[in-house]
Figure 1: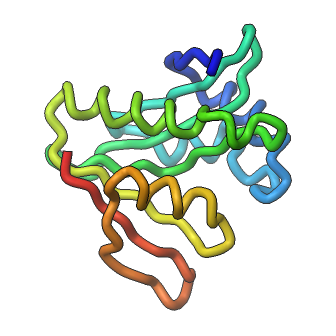
Figure 2 (figure 1 turned 90 degrees about the vertical axis):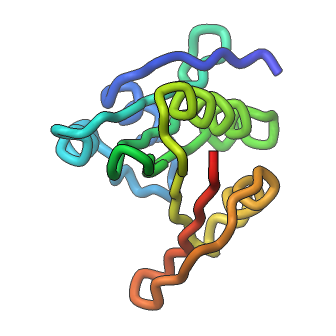
Length: 140
């Protein structure tokens, strides 16, 4: 693995997201900034040889719970450990600043993400039948 994890921006996320077809370019800079406005947040970017290839974005729900909102890795870099490094870096950072839990939602149409979460100790806490989103939580 020759990835580096750095703090990033909404513009970095938009750049990467534009090349992830299954996300349909939904995570543009304006949407990201609107969601993160007035919240403690964290944007992490995976970089390989200076090229941004993945991201993980989250924000505080309250003083104890951090919500890992969106993340993705460019298709040609999947299966090489970038998502794992992003997850670990996010958990480490939020644990250090005092969060006790991390929550995330995903869907059956993202099986690699579901496997990543389960492999890293996230437990299923619910299912929304309207959105078909599966809720997970991990105690830090």
